[in-house]
Image (cartoon, rainbow, N blue to C red; front, side, top):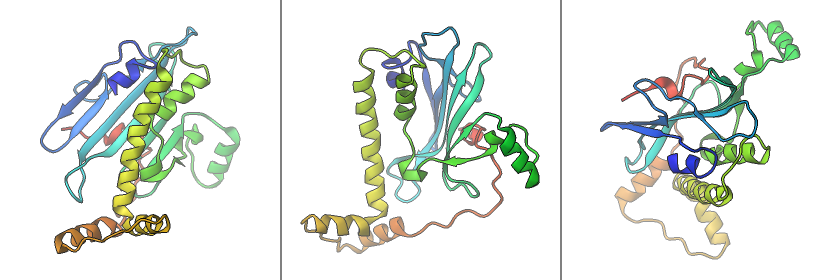
Length: 238
């Protein structure tokens, strides 16, 4: 992540990982408690900042793959202090809202009037709306946000930005495709057969049981999850 940022839109971004036997926290300018924004290269005088933090564990089903339990990606503008403009959040097994969503820190008077009619009295009501962005497997990559900022002219990229983004984004998407296949083996088998492949299911009972566990529907957790996602990857720490 540090190389990605410094090869595209930053000059001296620092990304730190804090690792224990059970989990890892990775973030920009990560201190004892939480990540801090890093400034991106801009043409204008007003600063544009990025704040990223992820909570990682081994996957629960196989304990083989590094898995994102929660992540926060915030875009901020302004000088010190800078203001949060929007944030992408992911929280695995989130109850009430979509696991992957975006929240925009803005006001919309008409929406706030509607929310008041519904008994919701929040100010800046738009910031409380969780907008889904592709779910667990098809959520945007950090590279998508960086590309948006570049093509919109909000940040000044380095010369090799496009090649860097395409490579790291491709790696991310290949991993997501593999995860989709592991948990949707029936769909994968059907499509491969349609294309002319021969698919041989495993005969080993242990492997068959493992596949069954992977594809079995997982119950959503009970409870009233009212978190707005802005608590930076659940503020979980090693």
